[in-house]
Amino acid sequence: MSAPSNHLIVCQTCGEHNAPNAEFCGNCGDFLKWTGAQVQAGPVRPDARPAPQQTHRPQRTLKRQPQPGDLICGQCGSGNVPTRKFCGVCGYSLIDAVTQKQPWWKRWLPRKGPKVRERGSRPRRVSRFAKVRHVVGRAFRWVLALAVLLFGLLYGFSQPFRTNVNTRVIDAKDTVAGKLFEDWVPIRQSSISASQEQPEHPAGFAMDLDTGSFWAAKTDPKTAALTIQFDRTTDLRRLIIHSGDPKKFLGSARPQRLTLVFDTGETDDITLTDTREKQEHGIKNGNGVKQVQILVAGVYPSTESTDTVISEIELFEREVK
Image (cartoon, rainbow, N blue to C red):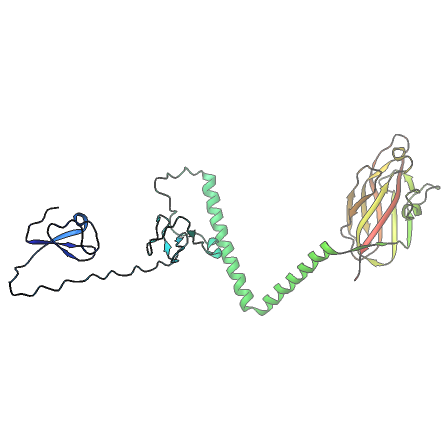
């Protein structure tokens, strides 16, 4: 960049006036062929005082308020766009800078505006199913955000609603804690009878705490049943059963499925495995009962006998504290 002798070169970065043959600004060091501008130099009188030279005072670069996705400078804490490698305020390296995270609640809100893609990337062809899924997902996020907002408004400004929610939360917590941590204790029957039984193996042998004896009855899914009564109302929770003849396990039929019929009108089905070991099963719908009928709804058959055998049944109730 050549300049006539009567022209000065003004640096566009800092405003410094430089000699016509200068290549770099004497104040800021910028390359004048890129940042310089020629200006006409006026006539100078011999007795005129030289004009005071303007002293450039560089302005302090203001910190950028961190935005989601910005790189946070570890030196000064300023936010920088993700494409920078050095901080725009202090010049510190951003190689180890952390990224400003978006608040969690904003991640649930639908995005505004078109999706920003990286330079040089080509969008993939989107299938119709993906478009539908995207629309449904966006609608779901809107609905969820509105539901959360409505719930927060009702909870904050409606005393009856807040009281109802608190009550339900406490009840649910107590219910879960009760199911996870409740204790069971055995409950003894006040009486036990059977729709049918073999004379040598009556119904009482099914709950005598002796696995060497057993109840036996003709195999009949409609009538083979035990009726157990208690002297008080109880909440049944567990059942332990020993199937078959303890001395000759395959010599008789073994129960394969039991149906528990409670005096409250509720029922529960329990499927058993064909094993001589004891089996433990949970009982559903057994709250507030004084009687339960255990119906043998299916059996594992035997080629030696048509009798169904149960050697022992134990029932457990929820412990009352």
